[in-house]
Length: 307
Image (cartoon, rainbow, N blue to C red; front, side):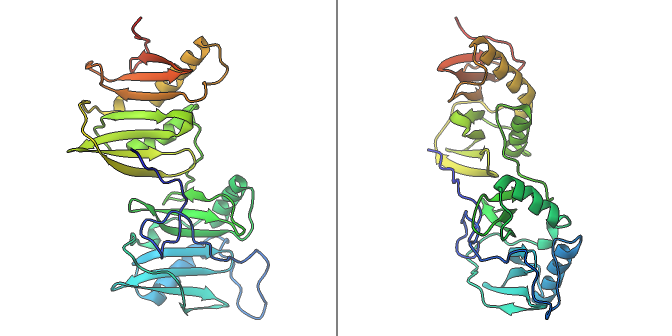
């Protein structure tokens, strides 16, 4: 049974597989005291600059967490098996006490993450979360040895994810071509062969299954979260196929066609899709279930449902 965590990023220092951002109190956008040097890390180049300064102070790029708010920044690194944290606080960089621990989470080079438009990231996150209160960006492992950037608020609202290059992990709608295409790109990635590709009922996400010996590795992209993988012990008789044969545009048009025939304005709740080779055809087929009725289509969108 697939187990997909739906938690967000976090507590990187407390668990190697934690999924909720650290609930660290973050400063508001109120101007800090004029008695100390002021830096606004949302200004162009400032976030990247302070990260480099923190790296210089720490003497290593072996990071497990970065935290940046408007006026504060910190870097947690690993030396040996010990986590230490350096931070910009009140006009200087110094080592600070932290509850961050190294428990095997992904180590990364913070310079690989695009912080050139922190202000833009905060603005996009505020629009989605409907809050800009105490915004903080974190770079930390989300799951499956994959590191993302997130923006959270204090008080906590919606966690918004960003990729390494600074682009938004969108909240995908799998009834639209744009949503299907982004989810498809995320779950397929560089895979050349899969045993199944599908969409879970009730917009539960798009997935691909890959058989590895007597296990199935499922990669899922849920509507509001980055991809995750889960492994279950199960054999399969489904032949593998090239996922490039499956076109999101054909999925979208086929769903629209099925929906039009059922006289519904939108896809019925609980609709799902599985693409596989269960019928031993030369190419896999698309098996839609909409409104409790199954429709079988070729990868070109031709209805071949048995009657």
